[in-house]
Image (cartoon, rainbow, N blue to C red; front, side, top):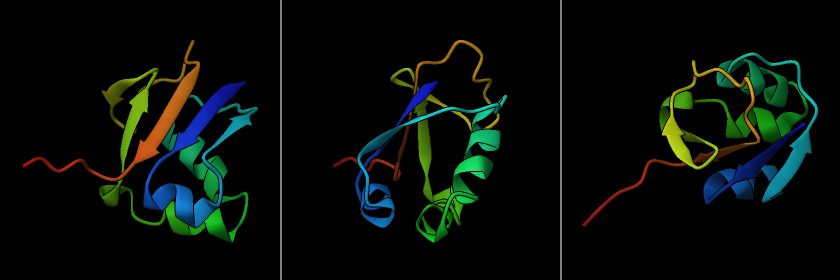
Length: 82
């Protein structure tokens, strides 16, 4: 079971700030495919992965990263500084 967290417009599109997901996914990309298949809201939120960033257990990561032993995955738009 993995805790999946959503931030900013990702949260708004899905309608949830977090959810616990039972998954067989091996990578973040596999998890995204599973989430997209859940419903139209998830599919819209994950339609363009170039517009998203991911963190695994609170460390920035990539979509091809392994989920082996992961407790939390977070999705959010790119951060801007200033």
